[in-house]
Image (tube, rainbow, N blue to C red; front, side, top):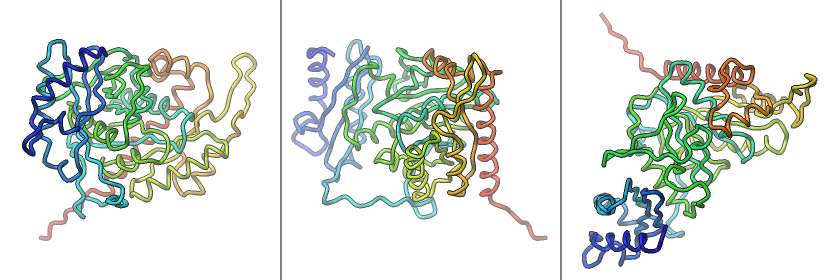
Length: 369
């Protein structure tokens, strides 16, 4: 982004009153992180915590003003309010009966988090293939890329370089392989770093969830960032998750972190749908010899120990990697292959568990004669 374009955006934002009298949002020091890429503009309004609930109208006016600039295709203004450290308290998850405010996504039946305790275990590849597998099973599927710092879904689903359209109110998700997709990666260049603090990230994620025209969905797969930090905790508390799937490789060091991820979801009362063991084994394509490069069976043993289901094993396989890099997950490029069948079998188990859970919590109405 050239300095001239950035200055043009800032000048327009100087015309937006702060809503508290006497100043505009730029002079108030609220405007941060102005980014422009191929006509798509994002910026953050970082406001005092006590004002945050009252400035949504101001945020919308700021978006509209920038959207009127020549050459602007879409605008995303993230409103974030960060409390001082001494004001922070440990967030507590409550269900709907206790009055906790959750994001309203009424057109989405199920939201499933694909998570891992650490990076490098193939979580995003697993999420993409499960999403495509569910779509091939006839479900209406979306994939939400919640990994703001390392968004990979645009490339994995063959959508790199494309930009979502907007009708001025909501963003239209991109779609490929039968899956609707939304990612911050559509808004910035692949090699541009996202240098945001936690509240900015959560503001962006919430806006992407709320301001996207998802349509009617059976299941939304959420590719969570690795670890158990602010993003994972807040997503668990603000998004009505139907369940979480934990992905791990079989070696002990990965399983240590996988256990932490599982226990985090349990503490915030998100149902655990099960464990997946990725890179479970390697079959030599030339001689057929099997090698357990990262050990084998660790995730299944951990699932038994932690009293949750084991959903299946995914091999360490070159074709899975090649397909993902090409933007055609193996469940789309070779749906009849043994590798794809592993993902499809897991997707069937997830779908069955979601159905069973929904039936279990559905109210029973008895009419007395």
